[in-house]
Image (cartoon, rainbow, N blue to C red; front, side, top):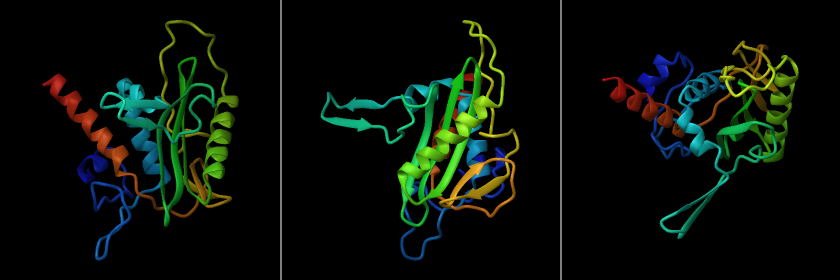
Length: 200
């Protein structure tokens, strides 16, 4: 995971676990930034099959014995939202790497460290709304292809901290924010390996 993070230029990310849970006694915490998670999310958008999973709001398993319900409240609420990952733990607060696509244009918003889930969701919703209102979308056509954009308010990927500890990938200076989401990187690693196998 750390090798793949380095390949993606996630320079401020270090994983000490494979599970993303808070560190146990004597363990180091996993660390990353909003900027690095935006880079990771951008890489994931290059593998369209990921959206089969990240856009699902409900999924039964084992003949209906288990049910998965998405914690991403932006699905079905924000036009074009189809992922990607939410997270929470006490020290890191509520986080989300959200993405939406409209007429072939895709934006990614990363919010980290929010004290409450509604605050996180509102900030991500605001970032995506601002991003889409800042561009002229092409006319709708069946041939429109996705154009991934790595930040919600700009193509710049400098982490910033705003309001309730919420960090977003937007063009402003700010302190580094910490969170644990190795599951997202593990997913990127899986798709990277699948891609290499297909090419090999």
